[in-house]
Amino acid sequence: LVINEVMPRGPGSDWVELHNRGATPIDLCGYFLTDAADRLDHYLPLGGVMPPAPCPPLLLPPGAYRVIALDGTPLPTAAPIDPLHAPFKLDVADQLHLITITGGTGDGVLFLYPRGPNQPADVSLARVPDGTGLFFTALPTSGAANPAVRP
Image (cartoon, rainbow, N blue to C red; front, side):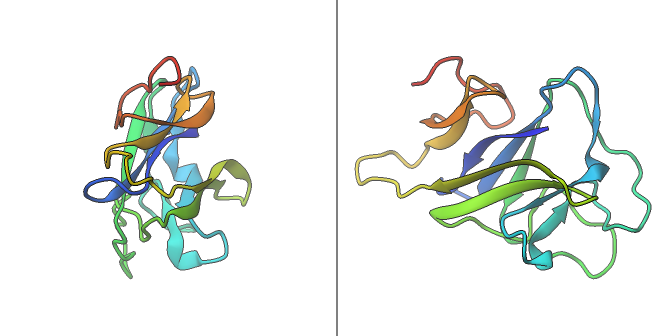
C-alpha cells in the first residue's frame, strides 16, 4: 500500500490517492493515514473503526486505487468513522504517512508545494512511474494510474 498521488492545493478539497501495487488484497483495517504523527486527532483509521474495536475487513483489491478527501472532517465520538474523509487538511509544506495499527511506517511523503504564479491550479504530486517512482508534478489522475513518464 503506497501513497500514490497528492493534491494539496487544487480546486475543491485536498485529496490523496492510495494504491495497492501488490498481487493480493490489502485489508485497510490495518492502517491509519495522518499528516501529523504526534496528533491523535489527525489519525484516520482507513478501515473506519478506531482500534481496539473490531474492524470488519475492508479490502483494497490488487491494482486498485482509493481516493480520500483531506477536508478536515472531524472524527465522530462514536463509530462509524467515514474512511473517505480525513480529519485534516494539507498546507503547502506538509507530510502524509501511512502507519500500521501496530505503529510501523507503511509509506510517507513530505513536500513543499508553493505553486508558482504561472502554474495551473490542477497540478498534483504523483509517483512517476505509477506506484513506484518519485513524486513529480503532473495532471491529476484521481482514482486512476499516473502517467507512465514524467510530464
